Length: 349
Image (cartoon, rainbow, N blue to C red; front, side, top):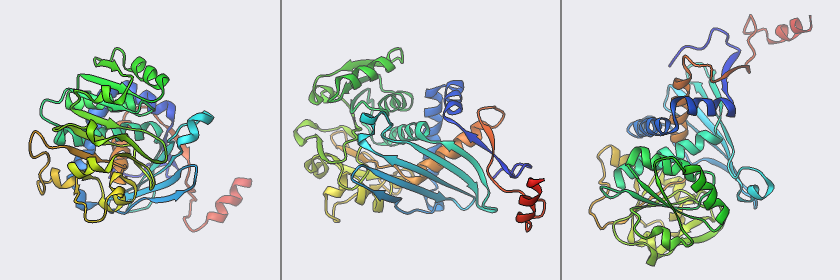
């Protein structure tokens, strides 16, 4: 762990503007590729981390969550919301910020926006799983739900897995047009579709990323053929699903942290006897990934704190030697650690 800065009261803060500068400086596909490796490296040392389902405050409008974890040397948390109706009000569905801290002193190391960073780490996590679970030679991806995360997902699958074609579908034609426009010039072949079935036809990877807080059926059983990999990233709270339960009955399902996914993921539709594999076991060689070419694999991803930890440490390392941050005065630093009141009094003078 790097030393605390000599100006103990100051820590780097990465604003949205500086996060965008950082991404453009290094290149988004480079960031996604490296971040995928960073998340995978932490999954390979899964046992080092504190793990618990995130603390969630649910309302009829959405959810506000805290996602903490530690590996014994560093601690991180993310504050994040999920409010599907926000787009109608001109707000983001998901907004977030996060903090990285030292365990030995408890002092923060970095505070950062995490709306952009969450989109990047979610895409990196999807690519990490697809790299292990997608059929060999996967080149076509269906993107069902073309909201704020769609482009990140497509570019991560291109950079990490080698996807060449993305087939877009959303119930909102403007969302399809937005995503197609943003991915123009990316090197991907973009196909816009008027129905989800059209998008899925011929796809090796199917990513679902929708926002409605409801039991929905984005994919039905008859739509999913043998041998595909499904990346279900939209289901992220109790009472919200995207896949018909018959798909789950046919698929081999992988999750991040089972106690959390049982509450929030697609598998909330199934009883406790439904078998799942925590994905870290595949990376550590304790479990098989895809077992044959006709198998349907499902990554039932709801997002987990270790992925945020990886993203925060990755950004903290990337800041070194750059000016992509501001120093903010967030900690009291009296000359005598016992004399906080004296520091206050001296400020009046």
